[in-house]
Length: 302
Ligand SMILES: Nc1ncnc2c1ncn2[C@@H]1O[C@H](COP(=O)(O)OP(=O)(O)OP(=O)(O)O)[C@@H](O)[C@H]1O
Image (cartoon, helix red, strand yellow):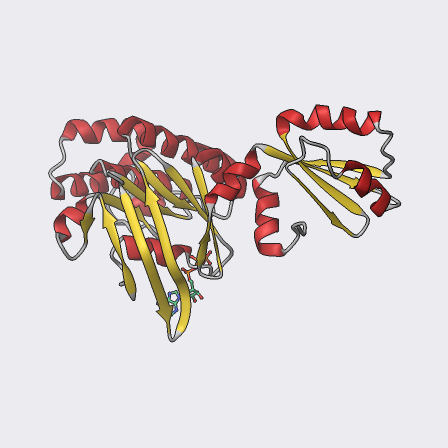
């Protein structure tokens, strides 16, 4: 059974369609990255899953349960940190954790393990209002993990963290997902972190999710970009090379798409055939390039 099943969700605000027929399933242990520019609808999707915003149409199931069928079961299956985490600022980090522990009937033992895991140290005794942003993020993660959720929803958890904080948070998230067989849905504008942390990446564009298959596929491929003088002649000479997955042109450039393993072979074929070019570039189809391709129209035409 999937941990999350989002089926055909639509959402409009003030008559403006924000999300159109969103479908998304998350299996146990998957870490799914949600990417999109400001206002794309990332927070709205997360709020709908968390039951904070109602969907206009469609259904959402967490661990097979609809919110309206069994509210308690639904809400106890996940934890979420959406927008700024809120604490009892005048209480210590320990007392914040302990309060949530008691409300949710979690053992002291479990809380001690989490305290060790989030590694705030002696500062756990201090009032939360004295905490840095990084410490607050760690504490909120600790609180979210207390109930051992099957699904963790994190909306831009790396916001405002320095690079070291971002790396530490990534480690905490991936370790806890592995340890607890927990699934994670995470949004962030830090593309490289998402790329490193996630098992799948989804992009929202024009209210729709872009199939991750494209991203997965692109990760194993490279694009060789030749800048040439006489594009028609060169194109004719190389268009039928059998290891090419695709060949496209734009202005005086030819884009050759190959599986990464075939790049050396392609280079030697170009040499053997005395293909002349003014410039050659190898692009790794990194997440930044996929992002540019999707949102900034810097992709190549078929
Ligand atoms: N309660 C609301 N009322 C009206 N419009 C809303 C409401 N909540 C969100 N929106 C609009 O929906 C769109 C999507 O917002 P959302 O916060 O989900 O985007 P986002 O992808 O999370 O953006 P960001 O990266 O800036 O956090 C935006 O145009 C926003 O103004």
